[in-house]
Image (cartoon, rainbow, N blue to C red; front, side):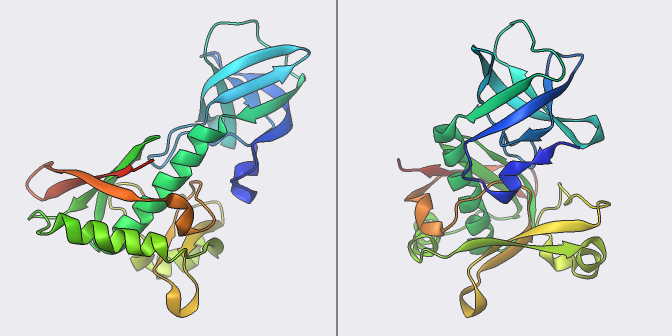
Length: 239
């Protein structure tokens, strides 16, 4: 399995690795990665891979079979042989915006406490789909509550529980369409706030900022009707 270094430190932007395989589609399988692979609505990281004086732009990162991760080149180039040591450099500006949006979506699920039926993250915006028969009445009020949570500068931390503990606490899972990964013995929980100031706790494998104040100002965009009971709420970073 590929070591997921971003899981230990979402702020690490560079790391040494080794090429341990090639995929049929042209990806480079690595033994360890600071690049986040596409999953949970969050895009895979992009950046650069360097070895022997060569610089290869990486377009995205994907999960492949056997718990491994592959870096996908942005353009056709000669591939480094298996066993080649290399250095990964994450496009930090893009990654950090994903972290801000992802954490903001957790807060949105607090402000709108309804089951989540889908979601997606991009550099400048994100969205959650809610099981919401009627549209919310006061969008400005929702934005106000959301930004007050940001302004509280709450810590964002993680805990781990066993598969059995998660099964015994199904209320931790807010998403109806994506189930947290189970079968590996333990599940990661992302916590926003501590003690009496805790506002959210839910399973998540994505990358997040360390404190909500780092998100910055959030604006609420369109609220779209996506079916008889589904409403899509889009948020934007103001800068």
